[in-house]
Length: 253
Ligand SMILES: Nc1ncnc2c1ncn2[C@@H]1O[C@H](COP(=O)(O)OP(=O)(O)OP(=O)(O)O)[C@@H](O)[C@H]1O
Image 1 (cartoon, rainbow, N blue to C red):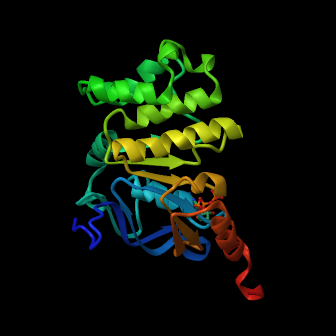
Image 2 (image 1 turned 60 degrees about the vertical axis):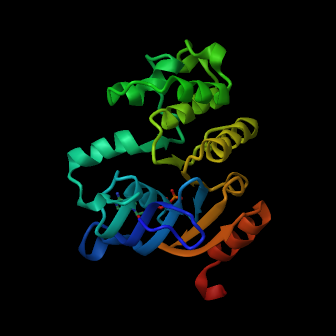
């Protein structure tokens, strides 16, 4: 895919992306002609009122949900042309996920959870890369612990390392701090930011939390399935101001 004039390389893009759930009278247009790009080496946040289409957008971008029309690109690859098998391989090799509920495998140790994507893909670990992830999450002395022996914040840091283990093209984080206390949330957000700044990773995060979104390089705002604005270098106050506008019913504006 072309570089932009500023030299930023697109990591993920949606082109005229529409997603309709159901049909007839009960059809819901969750995404309505969304065209949007996320750049390599950037931390982006997606925000918007409940029901605005954030999860749907993330699921379509990650190849977890089919699109009704339009295109999704991971790098140069139009993933809407892939069959299920190719999509599964793409998700395994090129996409990392961090979920609100951590989703670690309870029977595996922290280290086994981190290397799981590599084991599934039968790929040899890059030890130096894994070491940098393990150092970054600060849990070298807990690597043999099972998830239940770790705090929520520690589990989410393990999940973050797992998301990066296979050096994905992009990491999608769905409310990664939604189940954490504020101190653990700050640690996880600092970690995500470090992955972007120091390792050049690309992260796209859905969040309801303006404090979390202020860690991003850029916030994209959705409303009624459409992109209605964005903020570069967002501050928490600027995000709150934008959300207040979005959450005001159109008729009273
Ligand atoms: N599987 C589905 N079937 C039918 N409608 C759906 C489905 N998933 C989502 N929707 C609808 O699509 C719209 C967008 O939903 P989505 O979950 O993407 O919004 P969201 O911004 O992530 O919301 P929230 O912040 O509450 O999680 C909503 O109207 C929702 O009810």
